[in-house]
View (tube, rainbow, N blue to C red):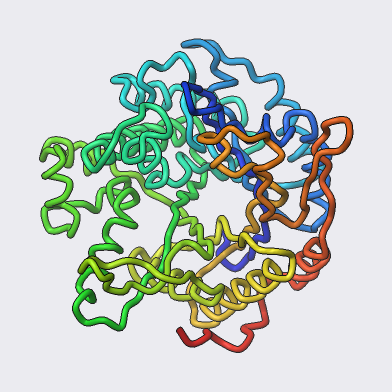
Length: 415
């Protein structure tokens, strides 16, 4: 991996939650956005931007419909086209939420870590000639949030105890996935992706909360890479919710080596921490794009490994998204000028996705089109979700043509 090469990328939203229950609809982004039918055109659009990489996921539940059985037809065709025909280098999400329908209790299943490693082995053995970059599991903290704390995704646990149970099992699976991929593809590069954020405060009464917030933000990554011990700020929390010293020892013995930390950041990923009227701290406002620089600095100071912006965009109109693009790319240029090895930038998603609220609501699908991308989408009279370019397409293409971010802009805006 050459840290002097800058990778411009986009991503296609690939959340896979196929399980339904009363009041909860399946949330399968490839199905809902018609990527299974329109994948060739979607890949063409991405490649025409001049990018070198694309974040793209494999639907585990679909390629592994029964224990021990794999059906690769669609993935074979799509990956061959993406790599051999369009010259893109995929960063493959092995897991972007979701588990197979047959895996009882999803992440809580006793065999989950072994099952996901079995699947990862099959992927690496089949596609090692096409794929070099792998993400073992996208955003583990978000996964644990929706599966373990909010009870919106299987196995539908509630609260802090549920969160820790799911997080621990997810990280076990990540550890075995990393071992499995390394064994099948020794040249694999791991890009472990996490939802990061930035909080600040001017209130001395709550200043002490910030280090603990950071500890929880990075907790999944720290567990995955064997960095959690009795001195970790989150250790009392883990012990309170059932994590044992034996659990910790296993994670330390099976610690993964990560080649690159993927940083996901959106306007809603943080804000100012203030004291509410009830005496509890709360967030107000949201981030501007320049705050990405602080997030990248913190990640670099903490881990000293190459970084890549693996997701960023804004829930705004085209002008608002353009501003966010300018600010975040300027932030990347700023920290690169400081010597921090940020080796890539990803606009994610490249096109309209389906808002996750679709799963918990009842209105028609068209009501949940979430326009974060370079292409907006709308259903035509035949029910086809047509992708329509916005001015952001040419704007991003111009950035890509620069080779690397070279316009540090005006610096970070005052908070």
